[in-house]
Image (cartoon, rainbow, N blue to C red):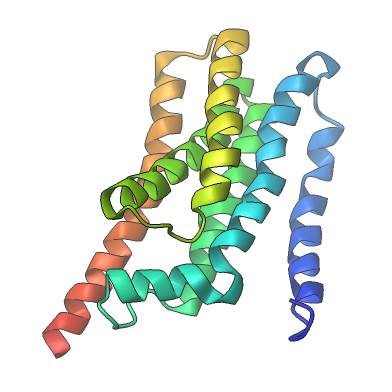
Length: 192
């Protein structure tokens, strides 16, 4: 981060995204500040997770080694799009929906790391090995996301539809990633 001077770019990216949240802060009902804080808190936690997962290009290399068997099934540009649009974009949309439509839509932002945690834990259990992002998923995502889902579900009593769509959106993001990797793997296998 420092030796290759990447921190200014990371700071700029995070700063721009966080600035986009400012209009929301003025729209939040003070009675729902705790709910908004729970939804918002997973953003910096996701940043920590992304650091654990991607510093030194660890996760991409892990996927290419374990899934691609040494072939590049996950590129740097794809990894960037996945993490910027698939995490920040989805969370941004969820937060806006929570503020301007119904607070229950904030569950999207909490189901996303919950599903991500499962996606780190299952491979770790199956292989009995660490994978990049596992510790922040276990010690950060599990308590905040699942705890937040339980808290918001009790406090807001969202409809079954909101719960299903929120969970479905989180699953869809991860299925799209898996589909992309599978498509790349198939394309590379056909070219071998």
